[in-house]
Amino acid sequence: MDLAALDRAHVWHPYAPMPATVAPLVVSSASGVRLQLAEPVAGVTELVDGMSSWWAAVHGYRHPVLDAAVHAQVDRMSHVMFGGLTHEPAIRLAATLVDITPGPLQHVFLCESGSVSVEVAFKMCLQYWLGRGRPAKRRLLTWRAGYHGDTFQTMSVCDPDGGMHSLWKGTLVEQLFAPAPPGPFDRSYVDGFAALLGRHADEVAAIVVEPVVQNAGGMRFHDPAYLVALRELADAHDVLLIFDEIATGFGRTGTLFAADRAGVSPDVMCVGKAMTGGYLPMAAALCTSRVASGIAEGGFPVLAHGPTFMGNPLAAAVANASIDLLLHGEWLGGGWEHNLARISLGLSRGLAPARDLPHVKDVRVLGAIGVVQLDREVDLAAATAAAVRAGVWLRPFRDLVYTMPPYVTDDEDLALICTAVIAAARTCG
Ligand SMILES: *Cc1c(COP(=O)(O)O)cnc(C)c1O
Image (cartoon, rainbow, N blue to C red; front, side):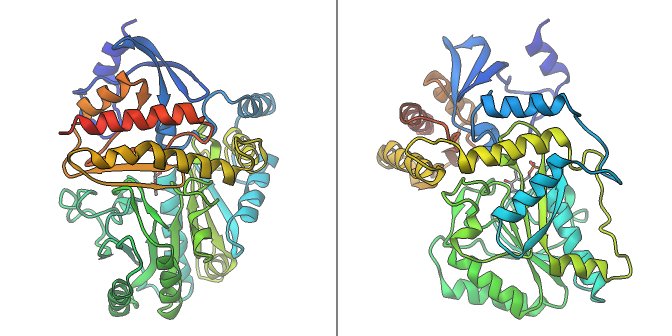
């Protein structure tokens, strides 16, 4: 069977045309931080994964503890409907999420993708205001350069340029956008945000942001003090606050959640990606008792959402094992925080030479995120090929060559990943 030919003929890939213009590499298996290729490419048969499979596979591949958790759950039940039925893996997962996220978050909606969890978060907020007799409050306020998913409502709060809003004019709900947050804290930025919110408070249901790191919208970092300011503004203007921690959650920025850096709690929080260690699709929207009771006390007291695979036991079981491994497993350098500090240091050291390359605008590292930003668009094919020749899997986008390595990456592989990021960045001169 010619897999590559069948793939080209029939299979859509993310953000790709049909038929595809760039052939994807066929991966036959993966273990530790390595992807095994079905066919050698430029003499390379395996690649160190610098992407954690889109920031999810924090424990790498075929981790014995996670494999065992999935096997054990398959032997009990792979799935059962969540309407009218419940089960231990989902109950334990919800209790754990309540335990490890900011205190006020008490109730958990388990769904199958990050985008859907953001949809659910919006629905929670809009229904809250309906319940409170404020139906006009149904718009969302965000800042530019964000990314919250690919479904229509989540697209409406993605960066209006990167999110291709011009393509969807008339289709997307028109939300409110403040400028993208500057990196360092800037009081006048907050004043501008406050003024925008003040003008529209009567129609705004919630502020929604990615805390500390704006990820797919440009890998931008900002001072956690902005989150404190947003919390104050939300309270002062009677709007809800949503943190989308789908990318930043479970340690990626160096703290368990990015919100922990600011010591504030949102009213609704979304998590996903790394929650199952990248094994199975699952995400969650958490909310406070205030939000839940606002919905319950309204004229339509149920949350109007219920996906088929809600609370999937396999995904919940591996999420439980992954979170347990993250928090209580044995890590290089001690606990998980030490391990993340180790990765951060490795990325800072390994990427520093990129500062001297032509066309490099910025090099930045936070937690297990390393970014080289160019002054131009990356040549995706050339940059990817250079990384592959160096033995590493990277997926640059726009003007960014970046890595979000698995947390189990050792220092040697981390250095290799940095070499590959630099090799990829070099192709853009
Ligand atoms: C990836 C991502 C999403 C969407 O999650 P999917 O599981 O791909 O639907 C939403 N928000 C943020 C911040 C993300 O990084």
